[in-house]
Image (cartoon, rainbow, N blue to C red; front, side, top):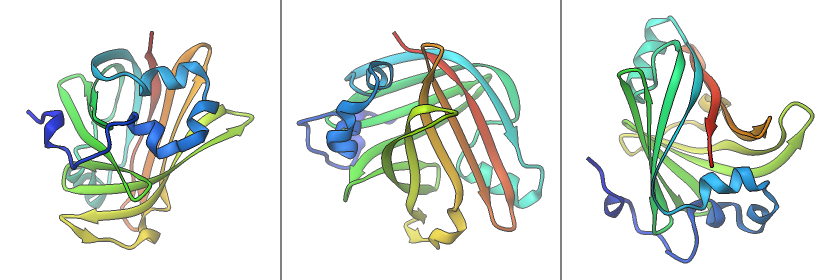
Length: 190
């Protein structure tokens, strides 16, 4: 099992999201900040709907990044945070999807399986989501090899509040492969 000390080094002065979002972090609604300002181990439960692509290439890409299988039901998310870094383990049924997150060059970096993403994070507003955290792909490496950014224009993630609940909406589509996954749902964060 990965421990927090196995992450690339980070500055301990603030949480990961505080570092990546800077002054915009303070603009976030308390329900969004709550999930991202806790050190230690925390477990959140909720519901998720997952749609997966059916093509061979889509399934292969999803396997490489350990994406969850198609389905609907409970999700359990364990977050271990400290020293400005985080490890997320999402459990849907018997499937576990682990990722490690840290800050590098102003990007939120996330390693999923054999792939490492660098996301540019922003705080935005729209009529559907209200205030949300927007994740935009700025860099991708597979086994350390840079991949063309244009391949990842179909990758998006948002975190927002609705009806007092923390919500997430994540989608990934690639040229030729098509949809890899689209999952959305909510977590109880207290």
